[in-house]
Image 1 (spheres, rainbow over the protein chains, first blue to last red):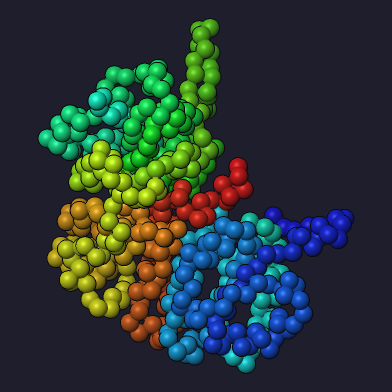
Image 2 (cartoon, each protein chain N blue to C red; image 1 turned 60 degrees about the vertical axis):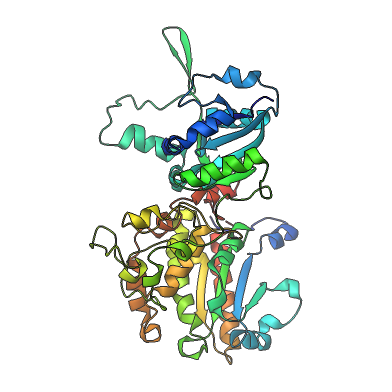
Amino acid sequence: MGVTTEGKPAAEEKSLRPKVLVFCCNWSTYPGFQLSRLGEGDEGDREPIIITMCTGRLDPELILEAFSRGAWGVFVAGCPPDECEHNGNYKTRRRILLLKKTLGPLGVEPERLALEWVSTGESAKLAKLVGDFTARVAQLGPL
Amino acid sequence: MAKPKVAFYWCASCGGCEEAVVDLAEDILAVVGAVDIVFWPVALDFKKSDVEAHEDGSVAVSFINGAVRTSEQEEMVKLLRRKSGLVVAFGSCAHLGGIPGLANFHDRKSIFERVYKEAPSNANPGGVLPQTQTTVDGKELTLPEFHDTVRTLDQVIDVDYYLPGCAPPPDLILGAVTAILEGKLPEKGAVLAPDKSLCDTCPLNDSKPEKVSLAEFKRPHQILADPEKCYLAQGLICHGPATRSGCGERCINANMPCRGCFGPTKGVRDQGAKILSFLASIAGLEGEEKMTDEEVGRLIGQIDDPAGLFYFYSLPASLLKRKNLRQGA
């Protein structure tokens, strides 16, 4: 099921904008985000971002809640493997992988969940990853 | 003073919850002496019309076990709700959906196709599927409608309390009955069991290492488990960390890891997510920083049917349920 906006009025087209939620690590990804183009412009004009103190603190229950409340996709950005001070990112790597294997039978395509490593200085990379992810999720359409 | 009226009913269940009541053994005599059982299809010959004859709200408490799968079950629990002061969801299936709730990985159409057409033991050349109405020799026969979805009891009617477990153990049942008779009930919506995780009360807890790390996952049939040692430490998946205690550690004492029938502790909205979370945390914990993505993938890949495993007893009560449910179908 894809999103087709052909022939629809502009207002409706806007309402079909993919609902993507982004979880960012406070210590690496978020500073990068502040510098990235995602941080520019109107708050309502970009993907909502929730800051976590470490991706290792991101409870899978919150990701499931996001989907149950209408998110089309959930993007998790954490410190690259050897840059987390708490090794929380290794747990997140395993949790997201296991979550992706669990989502299918619950009616959510695993592609709607993504985990990417983003370092402090990689604001452009973050913006591109979120943009690409949002485009892929737009193809899948709403849940 | 007239004795309080009590009703028991069963929906989509196995009968184990009925056994649990009988398992009160001689204590059941005290219960029967203190209450007037007005409805109990498995044991007593009361009919639906007998229930209808009671004034609304005049039955002190209805203990209802089983998930809700058919129109008949829905009709009966709504009737019992109207007639009862209190409704207790009795057992895992009424509480969270239980084993019958695993059917929500499918829908009515695929279940009927499988059960009545594809299953190799079938002889159904006409491809006949259950109908709510059919005419045989000029007579109209009816069957309850098989719903598309299994629901927990509180997704159908208002529930006052929950007695968890597959099946609830006798001490908790007796405790609940006593609390009701004495009017010493906790706040509405409470689960009538301790709010601790199973690990807290597990007899094997002393053998649980400070830091559990699983280098590989094993299944109960693959090893001869040591009955004296924490199952997680043996590489077996045990739901103890994410499951409420109060069961009497019956599975643990039978040399079987916990499967989560008591549901989560208070405040958890999705038991499966909690099981997933702790399991992923301890999988390959030792040396995690040295593992490649491929090695992590292989380790996680050893967990067979993760959705079925994590939602063994709680799929209908889960946050995601399944797609067509979220869409309100």
